[in-house]
Image 1 (tube, one colour):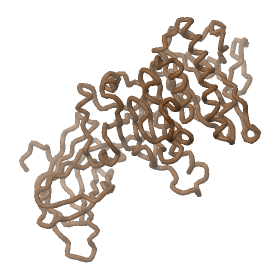
Image 2 (cartoon, helix red, strand yellow):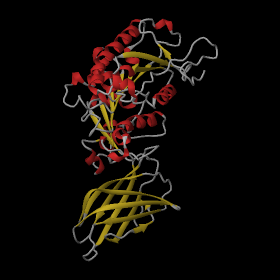
Image 3 (cartoon, rainbow, N blue to C red):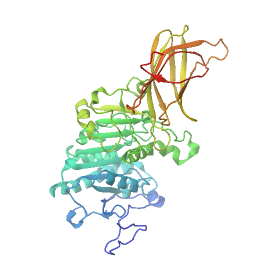
Image 4 (cartoon, rainbow, N blue to C red):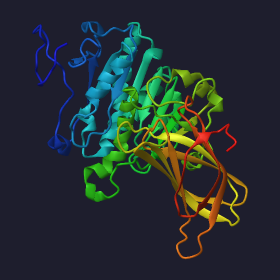
Length: 446
């Protein structure tokens, strides 16, 4: 395979040059661009050297094998005209999943406009163009069920329009944070929705800004509730990153899932708040399979999801790669004499290393003989836990310090079923003061 380092590099055979994604700049965006759709083919034989496909003469490209599955990668709005930084990554990672055709749908001429509304208008036209190409594929022997459209932002709706044009017979559409502006109050026919393909999965990361609120697939994954992503700027002083970080995180989470370095498990729930409260930490409907995991291989859960109807699943992430948090279900039985309200801080210790979870999204009610369930999420995966420290902060700084008694506390690892449950019995602690203990097997009486 030859490596193309310039816009017009030659293959080692000297026969053909690589076809690269259209590279525009701000001047094009100021002037506005007219729609022109290019289809760039990548296979395991030419991962670093795209081949532009003729929309009507598929046989002219010998690398294009219609008996293989085909994934179409569709970018979104490009306000600067530059190629997406993630294109090469997703091409390589998709090719690692299985032997497939990866087609990058380059509609940068059309998406690169300072006027976002112009780009929105072009999605319909680009969808008609891509629909015609797929119909030609079908005429020459390709199965629609073997096609997978992956659309980013505005590209997610473009993929939905293609699917609707083909009566929902496309095998799968993946929407990565479908665009919100101009689509918020539209009908299902005017945006991505579950009827657009045999299976539609959606990832939300920026619903309070550039992303679309609601549920729009057979399964919708909500990272950190689908809004503010850890590590993204919270003020406008961060510049461009403040506007795009949450929205772009959907792509980076999907890339990480494709790379199999992130195993991001989604828990079916009605809301992110209920998930954080520990009310949705079982996946009974999905047995014998586990809870759904974000990524390419969703076939294990497909039949269950189609039977269940639209399903929302929630998960939390860290601020950086590999994004995965280690989750424990924590069950406590309190026996303190006085009613207290507080938040819980838990540290897991392994040698000199420790990782902390803060269960502080709301105040917990701690009273006599009350069972409380928490979701504790840690940024690091420490395997051999030698010590656990616990602090319950009530905010009481001037009054007498009350005792809090735990008859039992139990730690259940959620995504590591091979690890033992950890327990401790009859702990007496002062509010706002840390207590440390060695975890015991849960079948131990003390």
